Length: 315
Image (cartoon, rainbow, N blue to C red; front, side, top):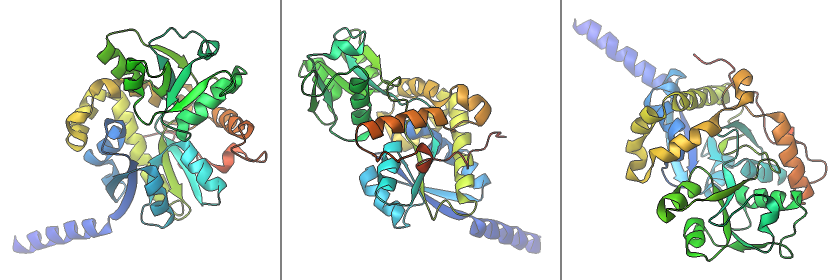
């Protein structure tokens, strides 16, 4: 009996030693939007790949340098984070998306039916950076509207909901799965939105890896575990929320997660795997960034992303 116990302890110690620690940076604070990653950890999906995951929260501008220094293995951020870092020479690649459709939208308490309804309005946004900024620029460009001449863009930080509700701006750029829900709940009024994906069909937040983390089989294992977390969240958002809530606490909302779930799948994922990215959408979005002068004319979408590590079939 004693020998068997020692053997069992040895096996457990050997198993624990065999696990590789993978460090993933998650943007901002612990948040309901990262539920698929929390679930993947809670349900042992990373452990099944021989990995022990640790999460570090912070602004992506702080996390990306840590990725390049090898202090983080992956970072969850916007595709533009990977695009502009790589365009400046960083060895990074976007390898899996959480959202097939970018949740960025233009919203207002005033009627919005077409992009032309923005003419003469002041539109608030966090600032001249990130997905929201590039999306509104592409949207205005698609309707031949110019910033300044036709529409005033106002940098208001992350106060979009309060600014629209108080009338400090006519409309704002924010997230359909969060800001729009908050404004409808706190104002008790109908919220009008404009879909930006026709002009800028970029995917949403997802996994960014560096050259080092993309070598060997680490990326494939991390992506597969994250895909399983996504799949579980889509199948049972209420249970996924309960599993993840101890991480993000009372600040998270099940309504936000339920509004996010439809963004996680789409026609392309049905045959190419959850988390996979549509090359046509990427190509059009990168072309919009080229037109804005943010990327060189020689830029190609495949310079910045890859579906190589996506598993098309998950157990």
